Length: 133
Ligand code: HEC
Image (cartoon, rainbow, N blue to C red; front, side, top):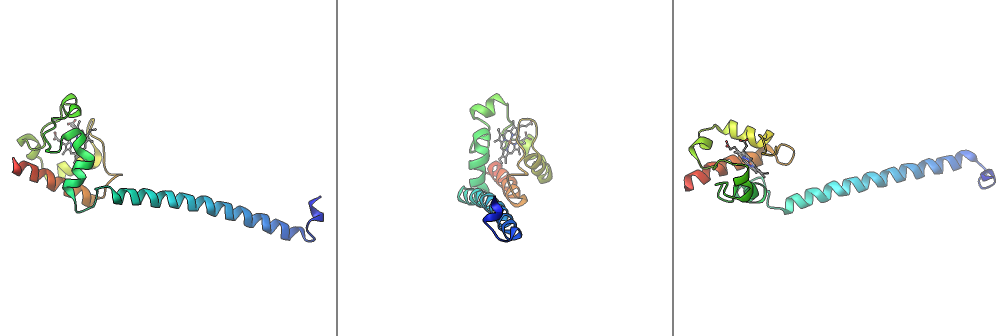
C-alpha cells in the first residue's frame, strides 16, 4: 500500500536509493575514522621515523632487551643472539634490513608495521648499540 504514500513511485525509489548510499557512506566514514584513529595511535606511540632508539624500545626490546643483548625471558628461551655480537654485526645493512623487514624464524616481519625509513633507523640503532659496547 505504499503507493498511497507517494504519488510518484520513482520519487520514493530515489529516496530509498539515497538512503542506501547514505548508509554506505556512513559505514565508509566509520572505516575511515578507525583508520585515522589507528594512525593517530601509532603517531602517539614512540615510533617516529627519526627515532630509532624509541622504536627499538617500543617494538623490539621485549625480545631483544633495551640494550640488544637478548637477555630477556623471551630472548633466552628463543636463544636470540646478542645484536651487538660480532656474528650479528658482521652482516651487512641489507641483511639486517631484510631480517627486520621480512622476519626470520620466530622474529616477526615488520614490513607491514613500519616504513622503510623506520627500519633503516633501527639498523642504524643496532650499529650504535654495538659501538656503545
Ligand atoms: C617476538 C620476539 C621478537 C621481537 C619483538 C623482535 N625480534 Fe628480532 N629476533 C627475534 C628472534 C627469535 C630472532 C632470531 C631469528 C633466527 O635467527 O632464527 C631475531 C633476530 C633478529 C635479528 C638478526 C639477529 C641475528 O642473529 O642475526 C635482528 C637484526 C633483529 N632480530 C632485529 C629486531 C628489531 C629491530 C626488532 C624490532 C622492530 C625485533 N628484532 C623484534 C625475536 C624478536
